[in-house]
Structures are given as C-alpha cells and as structure tokens.
Amino acid sequence: MKRFVDEVDRSQGLLLPDRLEDYIHEDNPVRVVDAFVEALDLGELGFEAANRAAGGRPAYHPAALLKIYIYGYLNRIPSSRRLEREAQRNLELIWLTGRLAPDFKTIADFRKDNGKAITAVCNRFVALCRAMKVFSHAVVAIDGSKLKAVNSRDRNFTAGKIKARRKQLDESVARYLAELDRADRDPSILPEGRVPHLRGKLAKLRAQMEKLDSIEKQLEDAPDHQISLTDPDARSMTSSGRGTGTVGYNLQAAVDAEHHLIVAHDVTNVGHDRTQLSTMAIKAKDALGAGRMTALADRGYFNAPEILACEQAGIIPLVPKPLTSNSKAEGRFDKRDFTYDPTTDEYACPAGEHAIHRFATEENGLTLHRYWSSACPGCSMRARCTTASYRRITRWEHEHVLETMEMRLDARPQSAVARRQTVEHVFGTLKSWLGTTPLLTKTLPKVRTEVSLAVLAYNMKRMIKIMGTQSMVRAIAA
Image 1: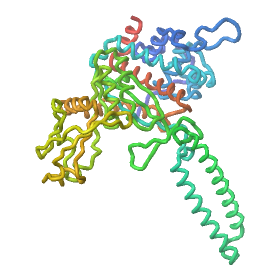
Image 2 (image 1 turned 180 degrees about the horizontal axis):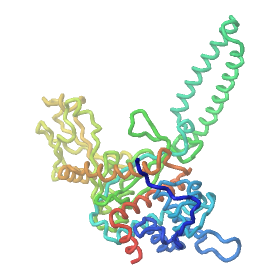
Image 3 (image 1 turned 180 degrees about the vertical axis):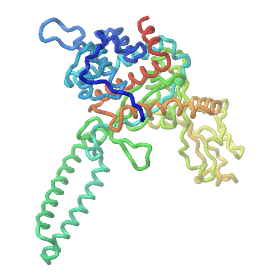
C-alpha cells in the first residue's frame, strides 16, 4: 500500500511560535526591505505625513506603506486591492508592517501622492549600491522599451487613424444604404426586422462621424497632433513588430554592464530614442559618481548633437551609425570611400581627385560644410560615384567626434553584443514581472512613479542575489 504525507488535523490545538519574528528566516528578502526603509529619512525625501502634527485621526506612517509597495513589486503584486488582501493574510507582509492592514484606497493614494519621493528612494538605493563599491566598471548600456498604457489603440487618434476610420465608416454606410435600396425595390429580399436594424446601424455610424469631426478639431490644437482619450499622456509608438504599434510610454534605462543593475531610468511619451542619449548617459554618470564613463547604445540613439554632448560631459559614447544612404546598395561609392585630410581641409576621392571646401551652411541648427571637386563632370568613375554632375560631400563642423567614435567601435567589435547581453534581459525581466498589462496608472508623472517602484524592486532583488540577504542588511546598517 502506498504511503503519503499526513496532513494536520484542523481541530487539533497547535503550539505556534509566540513571536512574528520566529516566522521570518534570517535570509528572507523582506529583512532587506525592512532595513532599507528604516534607514531612510522619509521627511527629507519628501514623503507626505512623515512629520504629521498631533491631532485628528492617526495616519499610517509612510514607512509602512512604502514597505508594502516594495514588497508588492518584489513579488509581482502591484495592485493596491491585492496588496490590501495580502496585508491581512501574508505572514511576510504582516511581519513587515507589524500587523498593519491599510485599505486599498490608502495604499493607492500613497503611490499617487508621493511620486517624487518614491523616485528619490529608487535613486537612494542606487547610491547605496555605489557606496558598497558595486560599480567598479564605469560602463553602461542604454536602451528604451515601450510599455503599454491603460489607453487602448481604439481610443488613441492621429490624423492618419481618423482618415482610415472615416474611410471604413463611409464604406459601411454605402453598404447599408445599398441594402436599404434593395429592400425598397423588393421588400421580400430582406427578412422582417432587418430594415429597422439597418437604420439603427446608420444612426450609430453618423454619431461616430460626428465624434470623429469633433476629435479632428481637437487634433489641430494638440502640440503633437495626437489625442488619447483614456490616458491623455499616452502616445502611439511603433514597436519592433512590422506594422504594429503600442499606445503607451517609452521606458529609458541605463544598465551597469558588470552586475546588470539599473543605475538610471526615465519614462517619456516620445516614441523614438534619438534625443535621449545624452540625458540618460549624464544621469548614469552622476549615479555612478565616475569621472569618465562608457555608454553603449544601438543605432536608434545615433544623433550628432547628442553624441557631442556626451563627449563634452566626459562620456565615451559607442553608437553605431545607421546606414541611410542608398549609394552602396546601388553599387556606388558612399561617404566612407572618401578620405578627409584635416591639414588641407579636403576630401580625397577614389579617383585620386580632391574635393575642396566650397561653402558652409546651417541646417536644423547644425553648421555643415560642402565639398566637391571640379573634375567630377569629366571623371571616368563618375557613374560609380554619383548620378548628378558633381559628387557633393557634407561635413558637420564636429565630424571628428563621430569619426573618433567609429574608430573606437572598430576597435571594440563586441560592444554591440555586450549591449544586448546587458540591457535586453533587464527589459525582459521587468516586463515579465509587470505582466501583460504593465501599467496600472494614468498620466506621465504617475507612470514614472510606478516604473520607479518596479526598478527599485528589480535592483533590490539583483543585489540580494549578488550579496546575500544578511550582507545587505549589514551594509545598510553600516
């Protein structure tokens, strides 16, 4: 006969431990959460009610509510309603809060009202990691990822979407009117009740057209000609899948290349990364406290002024240049086949001629210099060089910064692999934690708060994995 483990009789009296302390092992991660929050000066960080005056109904101390949220994001429980239930039944959370069980509204309001302070707590944990000498290599990988907002795609409007939607409505109206015309000619074609149904459909379509007209007028006044009805700050952004898009936010993160800790982050509603490089790199450099730092990024971050700003801030950017010219694909020489001589300020072309400086102009705030050779019209290699009479070469006034960066990239061919290995799995982990509906809050400030809690939980779990629970508690106490 098979044997099984016997369960405990529910009616039998038990001799349980007398103290909550006995239920939590010394290596339990909640001890790190407790030690970290207790070491913070919450009033200095800006938490409301941290210095509450006497009188009135006592409030929950912000330390207890902060512990609840950090525990929630560590264990994939971001919902305030679920955290309310966990605070009543979860022994770890009961130990962490000292048997406090706030209602979900109190928990949700804490996150809503203390956004900047929660972000400061996230930055304070990065400072703790720096004090523990974790960031020995000043190398970070920077990347962005789209997070889906509460706003659905159907409630996000652009001029293109309105045009496509109006076309669909016109086709539907034409189809229903054609059916009504057939019914007028021969009433027996359609079953009884179909005609009133079609008329109701037409009325709904006309109402939708009127709504689109109203939204189109609002689009004209919108700065970026885009409107989201559920979350006004959410924006439509292209994603990696072809022909797909996401209505949401752009999470920017700078990740330490050695231990994969998020040293700096930000959330924007700009759908591209081209203007984010210097901002994120400078944030990461300040967080690391490094004199010099190397920043790895993909082609989406290539932007000449941003790269120059990094160099001026003591940051070494490594960003591959996107190949946007069709010359090479069509069998012609591209700019890389022309060699610049800084002493003579000339370009040497593949035919051995010299393209000299002609004039300077300003485009989009950049000072650009134009070069071409007088020998182009009679050159035997002109067909392989250009389809015009002259091959004109454009050079930015700080082009040497880009050329130096290309030389560094050639000397470090593994930088692209290092970037992917560093930052991609961080986004994968965060999105896995946050689930299929990553964001629960609306508007950019609240989303930044929500993401800060997720980043804090991620960094804390990484440090516990690297250092161990007891070592973390001792380091916090020190």
